[in-house]
Length: 218
Image: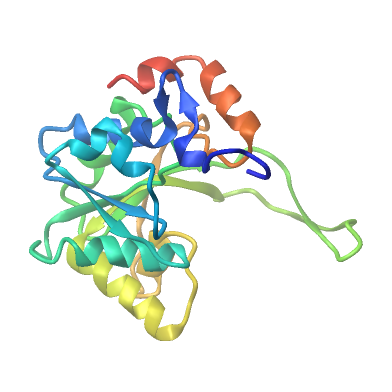
């Protein structure tokens, strides 16, 4: 986010922080037993948010890498049964709609592995060389852009992330860790509007997305 005055998850969007919008669709589900938020060590902003007072929400210190933060969250859920479902969602994805979350949960509810929201790639992809010139055009057939939430059984996800740590593999999402176990997560079609706030302009874009306001009011 460059010189942004606040970490991206605390930027304001339609009157609330990006983080609050990201959590809201999960808390709106009656079967959501709780939410664990992984924070940077010393984060003083979280406790000032109204959602931090919700009895279903707890916070833990995250880690240096995504894998470390998710493992810290799972450690706080150590009373779960291995068959219980866990969803991992990026704090900087505030446009998750209730409908997409419903589709993900219902599609995977009886699945043996679990899966993730994803968006089929429709653009032509190019691989660059060290000089910034096209080295290769990559076929897009069968390629998807991974989104969140990603939904797996507690036992599967915990085992997968521990295995990634054991192998010293810095996984970039939970599905990659599950793949290390030889399993194949299911791809559930989501919307290309699932912006991950990365630069300040993304906040403005999120406000302009058709239907984004309703997506943030499940």
